[in-house]
Image (cartoon, rainbow, N blue to C red; front, top):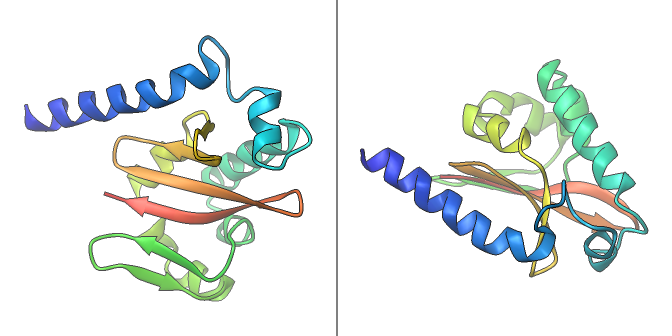
Length: 141
């Protein structure tokens, strides 16, 4: 029962923050994408597709190539991953079921100009540097 209440509250909070930005829309608007430094939403759509495909295919190298290093994985004890090789070694610790579930969600642009995939128990934050998207934060609850 407690788990369902927590999930419902998380979903409610997600909707409260996401709906004003893109109510009725599938994914972020062009203006939202521009607000985080993208010329259009195509790079975000392409990144999400590539990330989902790599995760589904268990292509650890491809997923690791989408990460900005060093990256701190926010979990109970914390985990800092300094490079692609360390990410691949720790892949199973990072790409948990909750992280995979978050990746399956539609990305959105948070009012603080952060691109996120949000699931019930994980968040993946993307950063934009010189027009390129990279995973820069993973939070696992």
